[in-house]
Image (cartoon, rainbow, N blue to C red; front, top):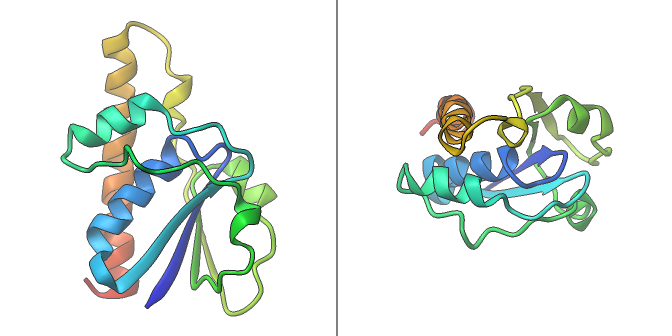
Length: 139
């Protein structure tokens, strides 16, 4: 069983969405965790946008990366440049991956315009997550 950590700045949007999709695509082949350099709580719009794709992340929690330093991760995926730069050292044979997804929490405009940005970023993360699981877990 592989251990995968998704790391972001606040563990509120991008890493939570990625955790939801990675869990969905990995099934029983991996333990999926997400964390932040800081913790900002799970963004209600992230929960809403994932529910729109039939994935429930409403019970996810916002965790600090320091809570997971003792877990032997196989893969660490940073989903923003800030987390990539601040990512702590994980001992062992850890493969690190990085993709700087736009932060939908910074979207401005009407509620519909903001939710459209959440949907756009969700789709980017969905594709990345499916391809990651296919490539690294063969599923």
